[in-house]
Image (cartoon, one colour):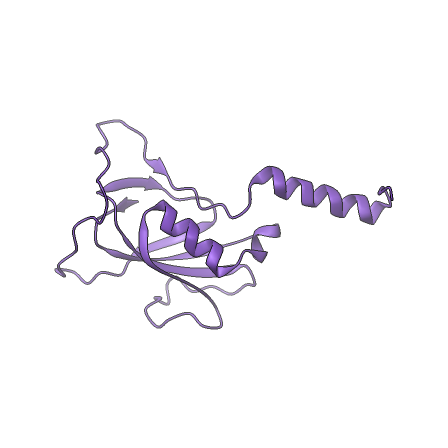
Length: 142
């Protein structure tokens, strides 16, 4: 997907496992760190009207994020958790210049940048899974 500076995007995020317990604040922080501003995170109970019906889905792990891209033109590979991303900026609408220093443009044949919005470090999640299994199997030592 190509992100353009100053354009507003909406995405559907589907979280699984322990990631489902991630707070809206944590998700907002991840998207802000990735280069978005004015980030809003919601779920099915309070999704804003600007979320198009094509993005909506049922499920307890479904979240929606909206935000404005502040970086330079950038081809990105969406993380596995981001199932869909659409540009909400109306055609012909003026866009704001990037709010931060633009990154170098991609050259021919360069792979897209991968956004990292994982909510939990994988080793931590694996530790949680081990603890749950140990408790269920009676393998804990007190």
